Image 1 (cartoon, rainbow, N blue to C red):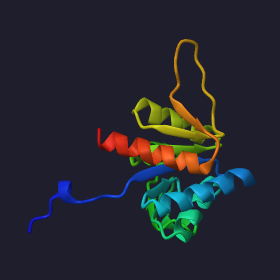
Image 2 (image 1 turned 180 degrees about the vertical axis):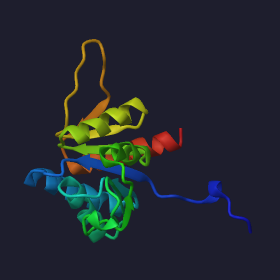
Image 3 (image 1 turned 60 degrees about the vertical axis):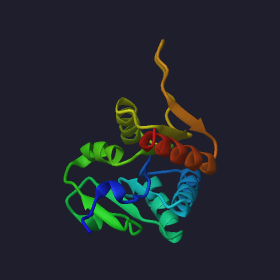
Image 4 (image 1 turned 90 degrees about the horizontal axis):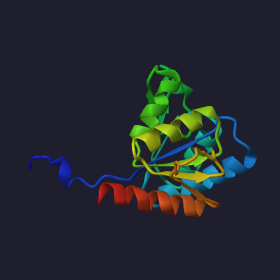
Amino acid sequence: MKWNASSVDRPTRIAVVGSSEATPQEEAWAYQVGRLLAAAGAVVICGGRGGVMEAVCRGAVEAGGLTVGILPGDDPNEANPYVRLPLPTGLGEARNALVVRAAEAVIAIGGEFGTLSEIALALKWGIPVIGLETWALHRPGVTVPIERVSTPEEAVRRALARARKATNP
């Protein structure tokens, strides 16, 4: 039998972005998001380092999920210990574009300027962004479509629904 990509069920890919120096609350949220995504069978994609990225990976791995870390440097060993598939890029912060492009939806938890760049790229490319205490963007006359939520459960529920809607219009 010849392999056919259209006949293969692939897991949903959700990027989780946030600060590498997260608050304890952001890390707790990220951990729960990781557990819930893994329980739903989704693959967690992130930048592979510390803070929100490490917490989401820890939650996902502890729940039996797959984690992908798209790393800024050349060394796969720079990934946090919960990244199961480290992808070194050598691109520095430009790897943020790959994190977003690899996903069907993005969950942003807190974050600094790197997170802001990932949010902006996702919005530019039409990838849904679910925000949990993340950037609030405003420009007169422009609606910024970040879906704001207040719990990890709601973030995961919306991200999965938006990802499925995007892949099955």
